[in-house]
Amino acid sequence: MTNPDTVVIGGGAVGAACAWELASTGRKVLIVEQGGHSGQAWRAAAGMLAPQIETGAGDPLLRLGLAGRDHYAGLAATLQETVGIDLGLWQEGIARVARTEAEGHHLRAQVAWQQAQGLDCEWLTQDDVRRRWPWLAPTEGALRAPDDGALDPERLVGGLLAAAQSLGASATSDKALAVLGSAGRVEGVRGEAGSYFAAEVVVAGGAWSGLLGGLPRGLPVRPVRGQMAALPWPDDIPRAIIYHKDCYILARRGEAVIGSTMEEAGFHPDVTTSGVAQIFSAMMSLCPGLSRAKVRRTWAGLRPMTPDGLPIVGPEPELEGLWYATGHGRNGILLAGITGVLLRQLMDGVQPACDLRPFSAERF
Image (tube, rainbow, N blue to C red; front, side, top):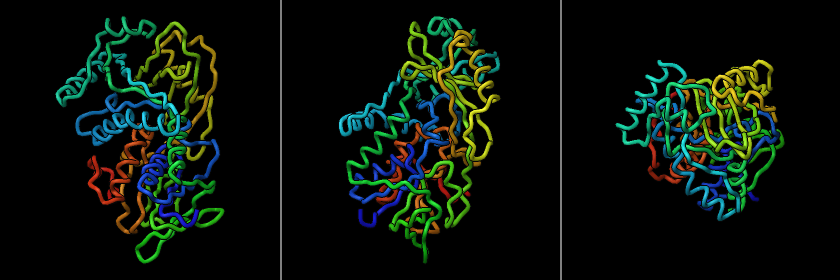
């Protein structure tokens, strides 16, 4: 490739989505990805599409999350048709269970609020939960979001990268060190192995975004470690996604994916005895029947978190041509596809389909 039009820093879920959307406009896109298999958030993600499970009144992530979830039906069909990759998308609902009376009161209020907003949401009584999922420990009921679901994060990233490359995008394995710019204009990216010059740069480096030099402002993105584990999914239990504030259980490819911790551990994506014990303690309380299952694997990833828990999406006002798509925290998979769409719209001068003002870099 000759000098690209656009350099995307990061080839994870968000970076790959941005690369594909921008390549679809005819831009020559180069993805600079440091590579390796250690710490990337998407490799450790469960892949839940769950904007209604934790939301509350006034949460600016709700509408963005709904748009992100609903975007995947069309994206899944497109990637299946163009590059032959099945995202494993299924939207059969997610239940957030209440284990105490106080939790039940809170979730019933959430159901009422969501229904008042016109969202499809229902309250399941103790008996409803027992009939649907008799393998769970006793509950006080559950909030159920019928349109929520999940997909396979590895297939998502692989599909988006393949689709971007089919449109002429290329990738290089290098660690981005700094953004280059002068006279208020971005000029490219400096990496360990070389420099890459372009008129547009997208920062989508996940938990490592805040380490970049040359930015006009400090980017307050920090790594938060999440540890997870996988057990065999019982053959006699239909697949499901069950969420509780302390853990979740998700069926994927014959496994029960369970997680997850939230740890301030720096750039150390290690699996720890204490972390795994925390996961299993919460899981056994929620689903005692799985306690006898043999652990197949454990792993960890680093989520890119911001101080207010909201992503940073949009332009850098002090350096023309520099754009941000980072800080998605635990919602990276949910928001990846729609982030690519919205960033493309912004970069093309089109009014974005969602209000991105709460996610502006100027808030820091």
